[in-house]
Image (tube, rainbow, N blue to C red; front, side, top):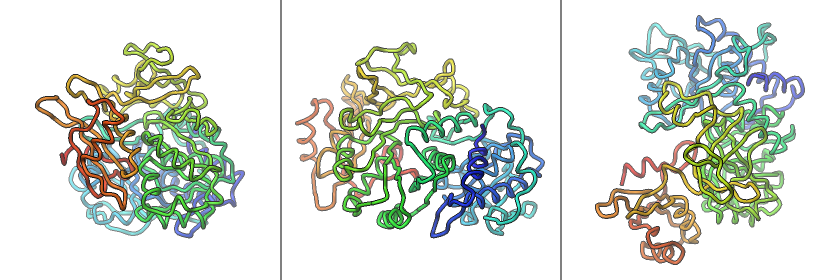
Length: 512
């Protein structure tokens, strides 16, 4: 099964049902299918070989969804572009994957000339409006729109060049160890298998409506899109998370049944909105992934919404993305766990040689299944480090308990070596967030002439609280071994975030 077939199969069953809601507009599955087919028909007429990478630079919108499925229907490889990146980084990605076609939101008209100037590989540009590319030899065709026209004959044909679901479908760029983004290559099989597994354990039906605040270029946001297209549910888009009350109002007015976020999303909602006071009558469940959420925050969510299901999940872009899930009825007894493998996936905790370890022993999380990526685009050395015999070595440290539930203990690259001791960043952060005065925290290592590395904590106080460094040190000393207490403590008004909502530790480290 191909990714486009998630849409083509759903339109047979749910043609007149709403697929996407955004800014008060509602687009049906039939409209989405017709529009994707029309754009695909135009793309297929380009003189590009099958599986050519095509960049898509759109904010979350129905136009993004149209572009996404159209590129895949045409037999090309979609490259979702991070809208938070500057022109130089976007140019790098387009050049790195040799994207000869670009689908771009007209809101990025000001930077478009920079993206396609000089030796850019881009030869064709499509948008939602007539805009200028800044080049006399490169016109922008305004065809990325919702249409009511008849479906082209080509839409009933198999996806061009995709007779095998192991073929490349998408390249998702993530932060690389060199500082440059690296492309994660995902096949149709990777994305579809993970989509169907997620639909299964979340028990998604056509009656679902997911609140999407996460960008679609982020693999978690992409998963929300595919699962709800696949089950015949509704994707509700709101790009205004800077104004959380507006998002909460949308959740109520659109009767959303699910909300998904990374830890900082939940912490912002709890600390800077009326979230905990809202009833959210239609909401059935929450999902959380994109990094570990401190057990104390999970408890607050459980206490505030005792009738809602809370799914704690773990994954990586390289796993398309979902690897494990914690059943809501096990949340109390297995608090702090990332759960069990998603259907069809095997997850082991192994030693350095890849041998499975017994319960209680710490090792690396290793993933095997149809969701494991094809590899990294143009990064063969890094690929060899994480892909071995078809298995994904995640770089995350964990233990399994006697029941097979997995508990992440840290990140192999997020271990601070201070004074000869190895300290888990996760452990220190989870301790700090238990302090009622702290809203958010980021912990990392900084150079120290005596210790080698010193533990640094950057903290945001909750509104109405004014903790100082001594308060924080005293709090930690009562709960942690002395060598785990942060040596450097700073306070700021807010922590920098990536567009996907994760705390931007790279930026914090550069400022230290």
